[in-house]
Length: 182
Image 1 (tube, helix red, strand yellow):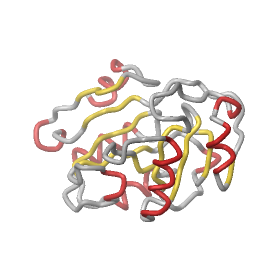
Image 2 (spheres, rainbow, N blue to C red):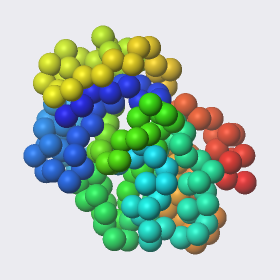
Image 3 (tube, rainbow, N blue to C red):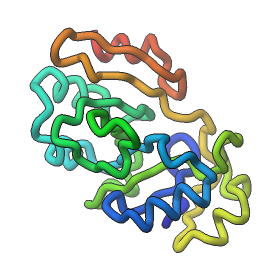
């Protein structure tokens, strides 16, 4: 388990294929086990390569949207990364942050914010709860971060209908999303 600076707030990450690691992350956060998380890639092309079933329009939208401070909900017909999907294996949350220093990281991670469930997001490492920092295997200090979480965009119907929706306002304003997806 790693505490790391994302492009928005401090995150907590683990191996998305390890039930033990995911259980540990959820327990540490006090997160409900049925609440989905996101899979984070540190390079857009690696993310697109890992999801070959995405349609042409969705892939083009992701190419325009990523990397950026957004989390994108995608259709997941092959039920990839099931431990991140919670009770809805047909939906995958994807995050590709704008973190050039970590772009060489070749493996995806299951990630969530480095806070207790429902608590404020950590803008500085010192704001990450001590029990999370103490129980992490690796803690990376990236200094002060912007502090606004990622914008969550639903692209599950984008391929079929062109429809998208902002489910959570965050670091990228809805108007900027509209400009990118127009």
